[in-house]
Amino acid sequence: MSSSIFEDGFSSDRLFNQGYSYTYDDVIFLPHYIDFPTDSVHLATSLSRRVPLSIPCVSSPMDTVTEAHMAISMAALGGIGIIHSNTTPSEQAHMVKAVKSRRIPVLSYPVFKSPSDRIQSDDVFDSSNPYVLVTENGSPSSKLLGYVAGRDWAKLGDKEVKIYDYMVNCTDFTVPWSYDLGRIGEHMEEKRRDVVATARDDEVVDVVAKEEVERIKGYPKLGVGTVGPNGAWRVGAAIGTRETDKERLEGLVKAGVDVVVLDSSQGNSIYQIEMIKYVKKTYSNLDVVGGNVVTVSQAQNLIQAGVDGLRVGMGSGSICTTQEVCAVGRGQATAVYKVASIASQSGVPVIADGGISNSGHIVKALVLGASTVMMGSFLAGSTEAPGAYEYQNGRRIKKYRGMGSLEAMTKGSDQRYLGDTAKLKIAQGVVGAVADKGSVLKFIPYTMQAVKQGFQDLGASSLQSGHDLLRTSILRLEVRTGAAQVEGGVHGLVSYEKKSF
Image (cartoon, rainbow, N blue to C red; front, side):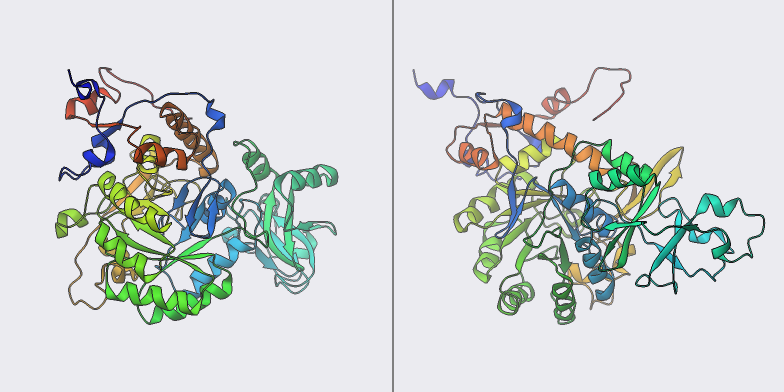
């Protein structure tokens, strides 16, 4: 009797060469052998050839996902944020500088006044910025004299009085920008202060309140984070492929960007190939990520052009409608496996972009060959995502929109879909809302622990180990029927409470 009768599942090569386009939910890994504890799983990886990460997480360059605050927090966690380009070049460069000038995952935009000014409206105070800083001439670069707390101003009977009549005077209010949360907390305890300002080169960077320090300390402990040789956090930025993007790129390089992502829904174009060559020729030490691609031939063209990383995915995002509107794309599991198989031969890391809804999807993307996962909806709605919270049917939400939505296109993202010169705009995305998720500083560490447990079940102690087990056909897969997918999730209950952490 043939031994093949008793084989479990399929090898990846056999499964993904049958002409089917599989999503993450369509496939399942079969468990392997465990000979190490979960804590021995290492998720260190690379975004691109020269940008190492401690965790395989990248925030997507979408205007409802990644601006400075998200990029700061992703770097603090050991991942990286890619700042969107749906804004002016100067504003995007400013966001890059904001990330580079911080060493703690706090972002405030301090308001500055002089002692002779008056505060006549509470518009200068809000929940994220409850203090006004007082300097000699009201500018960030002049000598800091003290501060005004919003709660103190609210108690004033006469709002016409000048600031010097009620400000809190202090001479030891600032700490170096390089202080970590521990040292800032110690300084507050020693000086008995509820707030301090971080300063770099005698200019205030942030205002940090005691409650903010305590909040972050309550989350899983942060490591060193993703830092460059100069000790500053690493950050990426998206650009397009037009001539004007060369000027945008120059500003980003001056701001200190570590990697640029060419942002296109279909990256296999003469426009992107020429931009890749321009970036590599003009800024030889800057890594450039190309994409998006979903096929081997697409990937080969960009690899030959000189990319340092590949972004994989077309129509797999929760707010993306490219596959419906244009009838073009690929199931994300198949796309990641196919592109990673060819990219690995050239040492080009692959970013699995889209289709991530849970930790299991992350495990599948990484084992199928990706080095990192890029997340949009998974991070949208968090504290660090751009936008204000609203309430809808009693739920706290934030807006989340596809960069192919008409709303986003009106701000400039249409060039991502090669439609900026078209008279008629065709939407390839929608506008929606996602529930409040809390801080990424809390839920990403828990997600990474779940990913480690998935790797342990597969007998893989690292991403490279997972890739090797898959390519040598030791890891086996099967396709799940619709009934199997239902069985693999929560089922058979009248109700249940879902808590991820």
